[in-house]
Image (tube, rainbow, N blue to C red; front, side, top):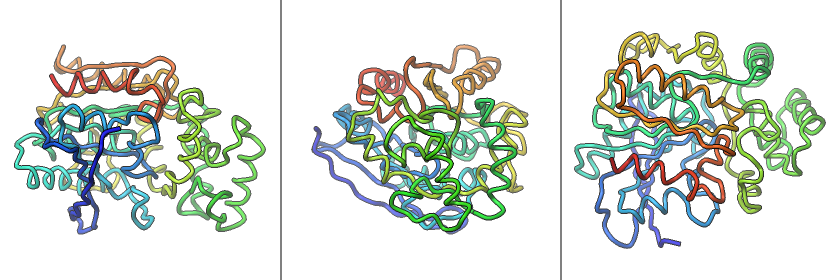
Length: 343
């Protein structure tokens, strides 16, 4: 395992919220440019550093990249807040990229972005707010969220009802966190009664929270035992403000803004992307949070605008987060990322 050292670099989002970047370095100075890794909803930058033999962070450092991990406002490193994708796109990611540029002196930054870190970062790029970014490797979903049929029911009918009594849902309920009220206790009871895919309640709560599947965010056979236990500490509060925005996006068939920020278009597919960045789309074929069709649709849309410029990789036997946390992801997934970052 590569010996790494890390430095936490605070930065202010455009609305003044204090966030941070984690700069990860190896024993020798990076020979290549900076690459920014952006996590999804209700997790944190640490999600890229699962207890597997080789993480993407270690591999990038070993290959000479200057690695930066962004904790944006959805990170569980911070107090829970009722964030939207708009806030992250308008305020968080542009300032994170600028901070990396200021810290490194580099003119360009590459990015590897996951799930709602992906959707919000792509929103920033399409709106022209991160002109310094050269290549964007997106995992799971970018401009066109496509979800399983039962997830439509949960998102449109169930989530609004729960949101009346709970501002957040927390996969730790019933394990390390006491459910805050009767409704939360009932949700935990429902998960115990309906999810029998494993003995890890946190894993089962994650599946209930984020999609349709047993499990939802990974294939169990792709996780080693240590990682399966480790996930209990890597998921926490996610707000219903996010689920409400995603419901609107799913209904429209593409990302839309909801807060009215002047920096962002209402529809993110109404005009060509206001960026020179090249998009590399990754999708696990077994993803039951956002179906692989999500990335295929975005790829077709991008191809229609600039044939041959962008890339799509679908990975069999992988789901959502095991694309980064899988015991063999260094063999099955990471080579695509390294190849495309080096182009």
